[in-house]
Length: 321
Image (cartoon, rainbow, N blue to C red; front, side, top):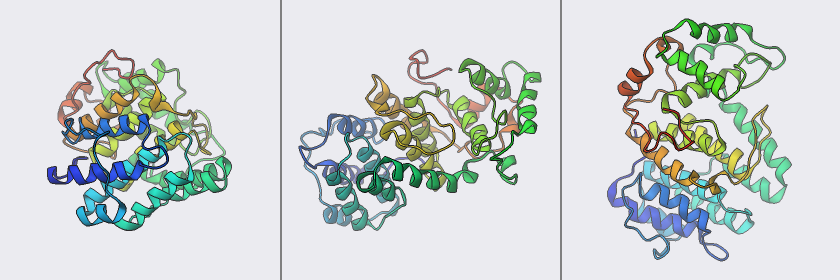
């Protein structure tokens, strides 16, 4: 399943998104640029003039878009655009709530933004931490899902299993995984106690296979890539969580490095759009496979198997290919 929607629904969905961010002085430049990164590369409609397009209200959107998949796509992008409004204000949050009610979607992420407005960043971070904890097992490496998460002690068995990739061929996925950690000066999962060790193993295999590096914009781009591969609840969370961490700057999770306004960096929005498009072109979701079982296979062969196409510019600083 890709992140596409039916061609005939692109216009009403886009008009609904415009309506959803038309508060105060209107949509911000960042919100419009992020929307353009989806409308053009992913939905194939670069011809739509977002600044000239009139919006649809919540009830109009609900009447025009009844397909549940398209409604979910609409909502996920609307929440993304909400997080790209700085500073986030009550008018924007309330507007999103109106659309959420109209289409019958009220996921837990809305609670985070209500708290960010009403209770402040500390309460929002606590809510996000609980939201994150609920999804850790779903995003963990397949062979670690039956293992208890270690909050107090390191996991040397995981470290040893990962270090064993050094014996694999130079062109293998496993060696590329180790190179990813060495290149980015990262310690291997399991070296210290962490609630996210099992998740990071799976997460970083996705980095390696997609070729996207672990910068703030890169984490958002990777989430977009993953959600576009298969828009299931786990992959949708994999997209929304880095948006929350790296765009709004809130987190209460372990050792995750928090940034703010990542999509305002030069080239970041282009990376987002390209990541959505590249993920949509993938022929199979490799986020949830047993990566250890394929670690000895050539990385290039696996990318070809899954239809992972190269980035437009492999030397842009966002990718290693």
